[in-house]
Image (tube, rainbow, N blue to C red):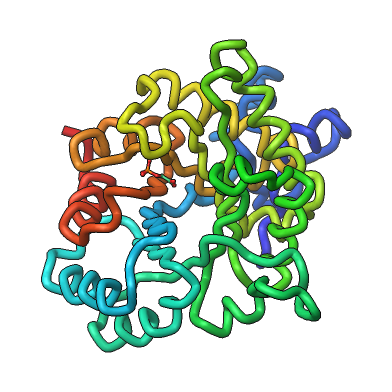
Length: 303
Ligand code: PGA
């Protein structure tokens, strides 16, 4: 039997209504009931929905030829494979051959594209559609990476790309993050709210549940500089609050990654922060050994 999920908003809408048998409560709904003096545990009500999946995503950008990509797969296959689900986002040209190589090596690594066309198909020279990416073996597509936003990609275009990815059966990894000037001006949260809100506004709960978010402060990408762990934790909490505005029931189950100068030596501290579901890794993901070390650190309990 499907168990009804009750959110805080449901409780506010109908304050006196009896709870349906077997109801599941979101964490906020549990708090609301506790504040009303209801003994949630005594009612035997269920646990909140499952936690977000953990992912470590490699973004190769415009690096690697076919031979170099295949060598990476060979190297990865020779290393211990412990850690969260790994996702490789190579250039478009390497997607299909890497799918074949990963299968042949027996690696359960997923593939993602670094971008996706906002169009389903048609006369759009140079664009690669979600359907083609799915066909090439992708499960994910990065949307709104800061290097694309810096080249003029707007939040409105990111929204169209996220919708196109979802329509093609892909999970969009929506990147959000502020510039250093925006952070210094105290606008980091507002910028992230706007970037994420533009995508969330277009999603019903079923599509929201398929989203992945990556918080990548622009000033941390490729610089070797990362925010302080407390700053990352604060922004991850902010992202979850923005997600909860769209659906409190689903917010906890959306993976929220951190990206920007993740390396072997800082992975454990950053990726075990509360609310962090893993990492989007650029430079350090080009080397199989470094990528495997980050993945292992993301999986291992914090020392
Ligand atoms: P970086 O890149 O790890 O090299 O900083 C991250 C990214 O661009 O996603």
